[in-house]
Length: 414
Image (cartoon, rainbow, N blue to C red):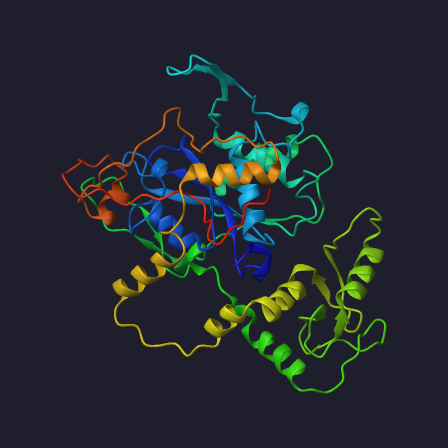
């Protein structure tokens, strides 16, 4: 199934990792499930990424999430630009803070010289400054993106970078710091180091409390499906003309106690007129013409794409849940669904290069050298993550390592 035949994803995020053991080490990736992805990066479940598999850098923490992407490909494009700000065309050359460098390599077989881009080595401050540039770039400026920080010190760095930003900042961008409640933290058990005690979030705090499926709109979706299945004639709230009985190209207000129905064109025109941006094609937000509730454009459109393209997703959403056999088996099933069948990093870069017609192939890393998958130690994770000391390596099976981005069912657009 092609990307454009799928509904808007329930959740998709680009994230910024930071090594707790070495704060200078950072990593940028994307995922539909941050909690699961972090467990993979930390070696708690199968999967992860080659560049985060070093025991000397684990554990990792997810310091920042960028959410609100209208599609999986959109998130992957943003991820690539954030990983490679010295190459992406979304940032003008004169505005780049990360310089573009190349290295000349000579083929031993043909003797030909070829220039290749050098991977940029960026600090945490550089990552945040480049994120600021991308969020205000014309390519992403009208996307309904939100930024959430989960580390207070990183949020302070962001605020400092925002003050230093030169340019017109978008006023509709939602940026906030998530601060867990005191009862959402628990003290990790002491490890070999008596002086090192970690504060670990419970399963209901931080990224572990995120809703990454369609359950939050389940009841509303049930109402809209029943509305169009009723068979009674329905009219657009704006133009007063009949809407298709199938519900195609028809939006339903997601506001509470309001089932206002409008044509996509009618609501789009109303939102754009209120916005005042004559050059815009797709609206970002507006008010329901009936209940005057402030709406994000993506919310009613997500409902529409789910009704029209999400047969599989709707079936899974309304499927009765079976009892869990045990926590381990459930985790294995969940972790194997989306993350373990990803292609290699080169295939992802080639696909994105073809889409942007000029993006170069460059894999992501905050390190100067490429790292191979390492063997995992048998030290319990609770001790290893609490002490933040380099564990001794012992003989074990190689941990399966996969690349960072989800790339299921994607189509390469020439």
